[in-house]
Image (tube, rainbow, N blue to C red; front, side):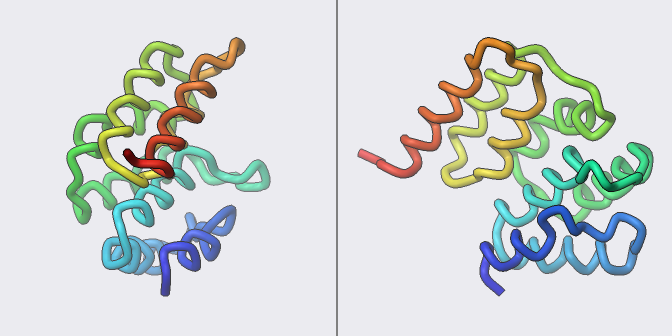
Length: 141
């Protein structure tokens, strides 16, 4: 399974209520790429509107991801991820700082997206930063 296929398979379809399946998906994602694992975290931070999964359940799944996946970005942004999973927003400055940290990890689009969506940026400052980071990833010098 490719990274793209994996992401498409769980996008708005993560099995929050099936522990055996989400544990399997964590293992599959780890074997694909860090971006695939960050997609799982993205689904925990931003469940579909149709989902009634609690923040407590999503935090429990996130803790399982943390136990099974090591990445420096995950460690650095644990508080931001936990805050987003809890349904709270961070400041635009905090989100921007997190996005700049994400920029160091080329092609981690899902990690970057979590940071981008973690704040309520009414003036589009994080959008410009998001565009600059992804442009840098897509057009390296």
